[in-house]
Amino acid sequence: MPDDVRNVIVIGSGPAGFTAALYTARADLEPLVLKGLEAGGQLMLTTEVENYPGFADGVMGPELMDQMEKQAQRFGAEILAVHVTEVDLSSRPFLVKAGDQAWRAKTVIVATGATARWLGIPGEETLRGRGVSACATCDGFFFRDRELLVVGGGDTAMEEATFLTKFASKVTIVHRRDAFRASKVMQDRVFANDKIDVMWNTVLDEIVGDGAVTGAVARDVVTGATRTIAADGVFMAIGHDPTTSLFRGQLPVDENGYLVVHEPSTATEVPGVFAAGDVTDHTYRQAVTAAGQGCKAAIDAERFLADDAHAG
Image (cartoon, rainbow, N blue to C red):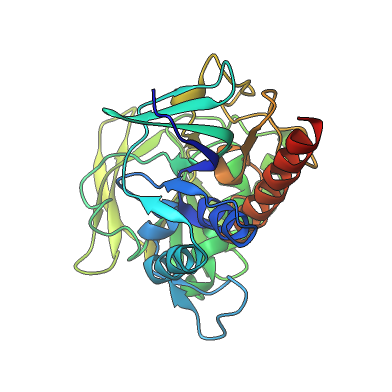
């Protein structure tokens, strides 16, 4: 068991984790950030980010994360590229492990994020950020007057398809079944939109393009027939998976697996443990909202420590 006890350990990176680190560092709490081996969150998978305030000409996702990390380090955050393998939140100080390394902390900020679900088909990964996306609000602007595909059949797919018609000339929803599972109001909105078509009973077997998406190979699941359809972009809308496996059985999650916090704070059920960003948020999922929640978590942790010291 390590002897020293940190004021704050931030688990994860991305806009939420690095903003939490920045604020706690500026509060002289000397946070330890265990950023993971694939640090930076989903912005590491995007190319240009044009909707993050303060960058009039846009900024590359990885560059934005690099700047956030350096800003937190400037104020004294210690940042380690290790993957947390175990946490014990049953008593304070909390125990956090990464392999054979271990730390203790008075407070923990969870910022482990979420990952978009992907199809796992050829072309998907190589063309990610070059026409393949999982975020219409992030990337839709780049597809003005283009033809797009949206994969999915739930509310998210309906929302993404409807949003994309603001820019695209045509949006085709590709759904593996013969009916959507989305709510009726969302379906009605889609069916009433002249820019949206639906390919029922269809899956994508491959995304094609040389440097940028030019189309996809679609397969009819009833007949087995395949054909290549032209498209300038493919948007995955088949859901996200919050990265919460470390905390199962220790922190409550909702029906979709997201950590539950006592809004408007970022406090979890365990006093001294806070959560921010996409690990708690299945509604907005934006870099700026994640950063805002990281700020809230840092302030919540700072106040918790102050109250704790006062009580002690």
